[in-house]
Image (cartoon, rainbow, N blue to C red; front, side):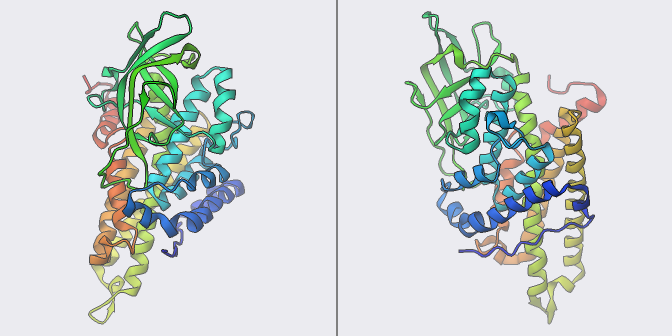
Length: 394
């Protein structure tokens, strides 16, 4: 089992901007990751398995729906708390953070924001405890960056109670073991609606995706709907159109912007420690100028990302964060983390490709994170549209 010697790096004294509650929440998540995740994550990644025992621990540290009010079973925390938890989880592994992020922002959030009171009471408390696990169905085999072109659809079953759902979704985190799926499809008028599909409904299957080189400690699969009979009461009543799923993605992207800082910090911390221990030409490699350049640039970029997300968290708490601001943070921070992982691998030399260090695992994970929930280029165009007023998508 791997030891976890991680030490957090706070070059600009960011802790002074956090409340005592924020720091307690973060430190609790950090301690859990050190105890339960780091010792087994490399093995889980090598074996391409998701350790199911993590689910209970995630629930216990409040990682499922941190901002969901207590009346629906959530911890009722603020957005900065959510971000800090995601940071600590992704320091452990991006796949672990993905599991919590999907449950929180893509399953619990839409039920809370767009669901009926009955749906909230039925699903949210069990999702918060991990007794139910969920997934989110938006991306399709032929419609990724253009979700408006989705083919998944449902029509009235003619019995007054149900609809018939057909279609397929892919690249779905949690799908192989999820109990419910929040699925986005078009109704008979062509309007995009959200609908809750439960495992066990005839015609609903979740084939697992194999052969991944990234997010290997996370379960990924498809959602396939072949004439699935779903009760009309499972349709989310309070949203129509693409703004529904995009609202969920804004919450998830916010969590990603925080999460990848954890991965970057883990790579930097490992590289810094290695640079002090690895002797070449009679002295530690950290004493050489080019190594110091790499490390100085790493901590600079991490510090910039910390400031960016903290300010975004303040705006999110005040309900003033815009989708474009969230896109900027997601794009900047994921790219930052990926570049740091690559530079950290250089500092580790050949050892950087082994499971003895977390570098290659983070690097390969981040290759997925830079693509999912809005690609690097799509987020660039979102910022471009926001600053110019011109839509380059069509």
